[in-house]
Image (cartoon, rainbow, N blue to C red; front, side, top):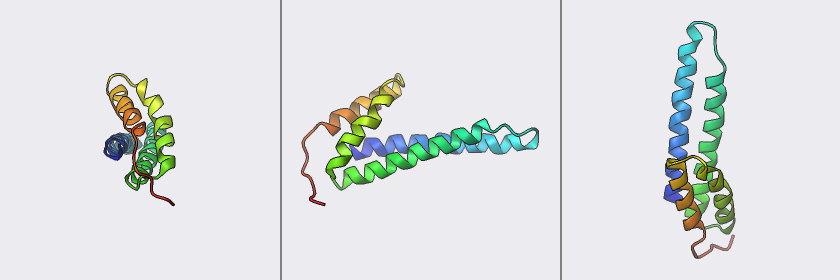
Length: 101
């Protein structure tokens, strides 16, 4: 599950970088702030998915339920988001050993 979360996180971060690049290109004329807002939102989502994948690597119990919650909106991103969403949900519902922390 952590690997799928990392793939999603890196996808978000790649699009955030691309959006920041578009914002930098728009600074020559009248600056459009939409790419910057998009970059900030996608960067925050990518960072959250990386944080969640780290918790899943450590097999913390709370990361299972949070993973299901963040995977549900991915299902609506057909077709790639649906695939990643279903993989994350399926792996979150599997049994794993929980570290007592």
